Image 1 (cartoon, rainbow, N blue to C red):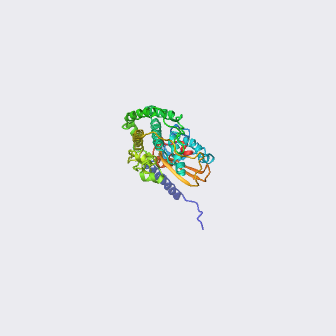
Image 2 (image 1 turned 180 degrees about the horizontal axis):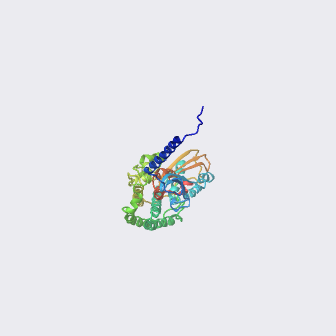
Image 3 (image 1 turned 90 degrees about the horizontal axis):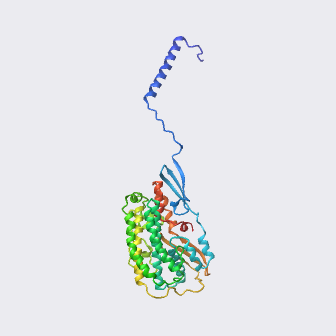
Length: 406
């Protein structure tokens, strides 16, 4: 049975004293332990998801990057492409083979000549056409001028991205001269349409070679000016050295080619590894570096510009009168076959995979664009860096969104 009897006077006093002792002990303990108070925050979460682009000038086109950041530190980067998609590969199937050449101008639209070249090489491989030697030499000259022009665009815009305005004006000064040579040759400055299946549409105009020789003789001193502005500039080096490091093995795993690959220590250039036209006759070096960071990719491209000057000079010396177009049928109908041909574009390996069904139109045409492949490595390059470094990393890959989206 429960004890329901009332508490007597002495027992009640004892219980009250015990409760008071417990309260006093609790207050003493609370005073001896410091209480940590967190400062008020605007948001409850530490991480945020942000949009970088697609209307951001430093994305070099309509590229959207979805980035997850902790403060200024990048945790994850997801490229969102397709804003410039035009269905180029499908358009090839609706046009005859020669009509496909102007579409290639709109891929890497700052390197139209190399795009034309890769497409024509693919169809020539289907046809087994022999290209006249003069046409080969002029093609290589146009390719290397285009490489110079493309690298000058990269140098000027990447400099502006990181706050260096002067290199932009220097680089575009020389680029304008190169575009003048293109305009005199084929009438266009940007979307050139300057090659044909089997050779070239035009021969060189009178005095063109002499003016070009004067330009390439002067260009090395202009490249010296670029390097004087940037190579040992402490601000440029702080923004590029150690930023976006990637090893040669990782580049191979990602399929990265071009200057990004060579800056990571892999000496792979299709002009030397799988020579086309007359590159196997020419004396030039393949610039490489070992650190694989943004600074090394800058150095490789500047050195490539010097090598392009060497190649152009050699081709001018080898030029002789002759035909500029091989024997190509009026209506091009290759045999039913599949071929792949590629060249070393300014940004890496540019290839075309063509499936012929024996008609005058490609059955299937697929482009292997270096910008699209190289862009896949951006999340790997950007992880752990700051948002401000993302601008440098987009520039160092040297993407053109016409080639990414197609």
